[in-house]
Amino acid sequence: LASGNELNGLSLGAVGSGTTLEYIEIYANSDDGIEFFGGAPNLKYAVVAFAEDDSYDWDEVYTGKGQFWFSIQRPDIADAAGELDGTTPDDLTPFSNPTIYNWTHIGSGIGATASNPIGWLFRAGTAGTVANSIVTAQKGKVLEVQDKNAGTNDSYEKLKNGSLKILNNVFYGNGSNAGINATSTGIIRVTSGQPTQDEATPTTLINHLTTNQTSLESAGIRSISRIQDGKLDPRPSANGSAYTTPLAALPANDPFFTMTSYKGAFSADEAQMWLEGWSTLDRNGHLNLDTPTSVDEELDKAVVDRFKMYPNPVTPGFMFTIESDFDEQVRIDIFSIDGRLIRTVPVRATGFVKQQINGLDRGLYIIKFTTESGRFAAKKLVVE
Figure (cartoon, rainbow, N blue to C red):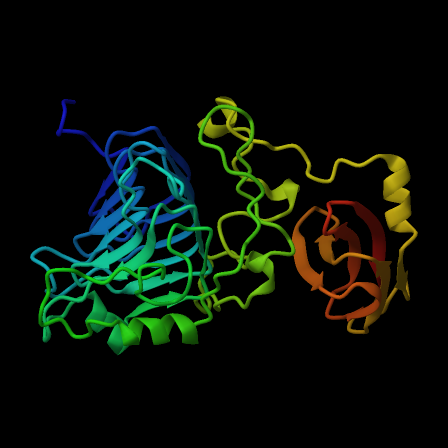
């Protein structure tokens, strides 16, 4: 190790598709966090915290899968969230073509001294899919799809022919977040130094992001901190865009991917906080894992009294009704008796609301009600 001669936190060189890595954390690394040099390994529940270079990096024909990736960057030294390359030399065949869902990235912050130049940089002819993800607190621009000289099989060409897909993501709270455009305040950075590129104004990329339901609305990430003060909580609000905007469909019949009702790496439910107990972020005192619904029994009872659920028991396949009467929005989470989240139903109206639900198999369920301000209650439902 020497200046200018750092090592990635985890380098994966031509690792095959028979390898799945889970619960991997890279903490305060001086080069890239996790880099894929070709191959097709699959990565799930991954953390890159405070890497001095890129958080995630793929190149040399990486074709694996990923889900539930989290990255957070330092305010003083940081490069891209993702440096996402196809092959070397650029633009040849074959090329990288991975599939990534549910990535939450927290950049260096709008006022950071770090260069932190871009969130996602798709370049060197990479294809692939990045979907149902969140980028926030990026210093400046959110993404660039490299558009080299016209006629080059670059990443922009892959976007045009449909082999690069950027689907149903949330970009908010970034230094340039004023629109899906390439103006000085827009989220897109245009490739520089390419006088004969396909599109000086990236119309295809703008249309792609718009058509595929990119959201600039807040996901309501609870709190961001980059020091050991117990104030980092990357979970989204149940009433934010992570839950209330449409999801891209998961790859069909692929057991690697876990179905979710939200975008990004984390559920709003405290019971599903997968960083807890094993990560250095937890051990070193970064995380706020307190239940955000810490209320007294009297308040809980007030919530219980404002919900009714009938019929109970209910016959499989038949609807049951939930009535609520609250001056704020609520979320309904349905859990199996062993704690698995079965379904989430956001109720965006206030006042007296009737919500009909069906499609539950025979069994015992816990129906949890959470208000926008964090109050909650739970009731049992029997389907017989």
